[in-house]
Length: 62
Image 1 (cartoon, helix red, strand yellow):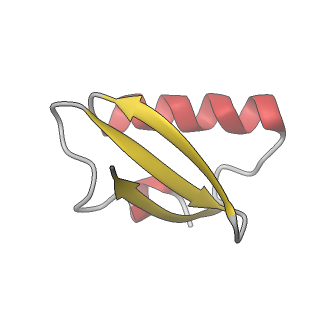
Image 2 (cartoon, rainbow, N blue to C red):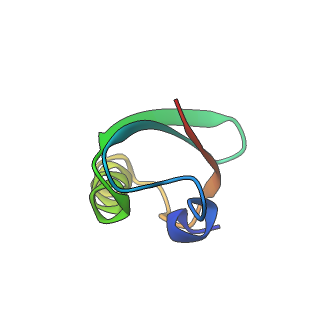
C-alpha cells in the first residue's frame, strides 16, 4: 500500500520517529515533523534503493 494510506491515524504534526515496514519483512526508520516530511524521506529512500513507493506494509510511531 502507499505510505499515505498506511499512515492514516498514526502520523501527526509535531514530530516523531516512525518505523516503516515494507516488502514483507524489511523495515526502516525516519524522524519527521509531519506526513509531508515523512513522505519526502520515504520517496527519497525508495529512489536511492530501487524500491517501489507503494510497498508499505505498516507504519508505527516509536
